[in-house]
Image (cartoon, rainbow, N blue to C red; front, side, top):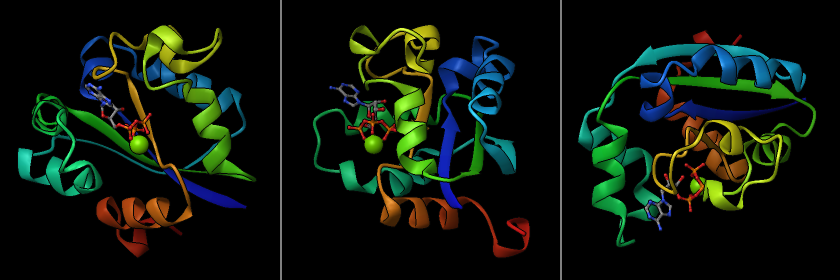
Length: 137
Ligand code: ATP
Ligand code: MG
């Protein structure tokens, strides 16, 4: 078994796509280990995306991620990290394959509906950023 971390981003929550995205995730055989609807401050969003601090889009990204409620979750299945990235589709929805969550639900390269950890180290950091051990049994 492997765990990954995912966020339904503010654009998708605001547009009423939470159930649609969770349905795609469950159809793809992920178990939801933990889930929480919440809002991020700009500083909390900056801490989460700290690896992107030097990118030109960082200020806009952290403003967007703190613009409204998100749904944070820990997902589990064999090969969860790579399988979620595949189910999400390309960062830019214009390049996302048919059948992917971003193709269906994303609006733009920034407002792209969903986040998924990109490797084992980032999954461990991101799960720990949002959830305590007692919530992950
Ligand atoms: P995520 O980390 O959210 O799962 P990703 O791994 O597909 O997405 P990253 O390169 O890690 O893409 O970028 C993080 C996020 O920053 C993107 O999902 C998107 O919301 C935003 N972003 C990435 N590139 C751009 C860009 N060129 N312009 C604006 N926003 C961008
Ligand atoms: Mg990323």
